[in-house]
Length: 338
Image (tube, rainbow, N blue to C red; front, side, top):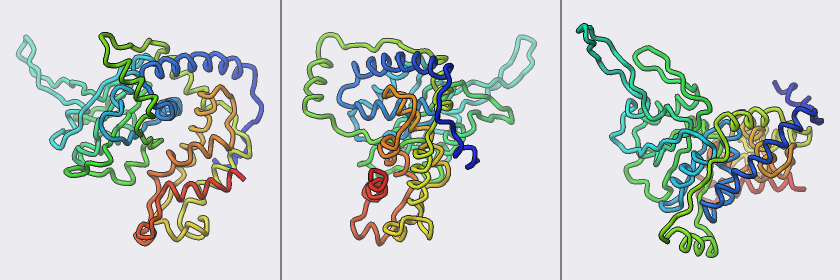
């Protein structure tokens, strides 16, 4: 597998170029449509688009009131996806998400079970405050995210394509929550921090969202167009220097002899090969969003934190010394800049 990646082509054939030009244009229009409704969260919007173009799932971390729900609703409209939202609570059961079988009785008095689909059968699902549901319910969702199907009553039911989950978490109110285990966090392609908007952006929010009419997003893409863009992302060439930068970064973020000597003893665990795969896809998607058909080392640096930070943990001693995961990642990416 490593050999095939190392031999990735650095030239682009005419078919890819033609497809890329059309995709770049429609992605630019979609990006503009989203920014016309979501103010002051440009980086969050771009990282979310990177997640979707990479055929992945995203974890949005932010306090209430930062337009996370609005973002998912807007993405559903602009990208032409069937979007649904589930509010996670401690009493939410797996069947409330996946669906369940009910007993039907026909006109001939014969009884049979009929499967009633749950809200997970959507192309874009918002799992709001995912850490408030029980581990059993979390596991049911995360298993479906990985396998793209659910099994109820011994029967397999495939999820629609494309299928994406954007989950949210509140970082400040942790009472009564069930933190996601590390193995389940690894299912998310990116962890995206949703921060407060700038003063100018908040001024625009005040003016444009409190009047008699509120601007509505326009439908720009379709599910088929998004699927075509996802296929294109996987066909974009990645230069040898970018592949090596990804390998150097991910492998240096692991404890043990192969890790970076300056941080290896501070890490409890580090990212596995899935992180390398996520970074390989994400840098291609970021390049495409920014109007390029080949990623650069700058893309690796920009995406290092959202790809790696939920796949690493510090030792107790390192945390006691004031170390942070973003700080460790910043030190590791500094070498890529030089």
